Image (cartoon, rainbow, N blue to C red; front, side, top):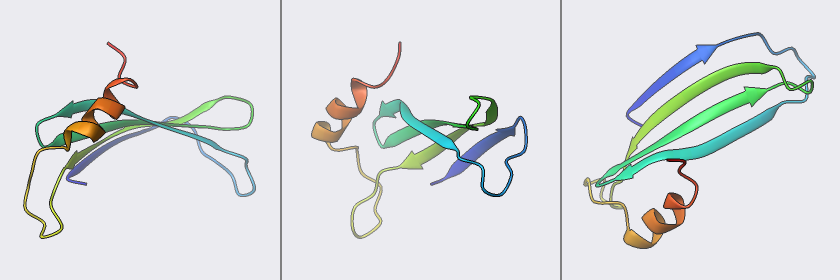
Length: 79
């Protein structure tokens, strides 16, 4: 991960049952961004976030997102 933006909306409490949603928002070149939401059991929004990632090789060299992975992510990106 190279960057994260978080917006806390309300606190969670110990023993709360939380729903964590994650979806790709951008897949382009070496870049993959994800949107995140955390909700409590009542459906109240507790957190919104976006994280920014760069695709790398095993040797940690920046490289384009593999085409087969980009195609799978694309179906989850809302336009």
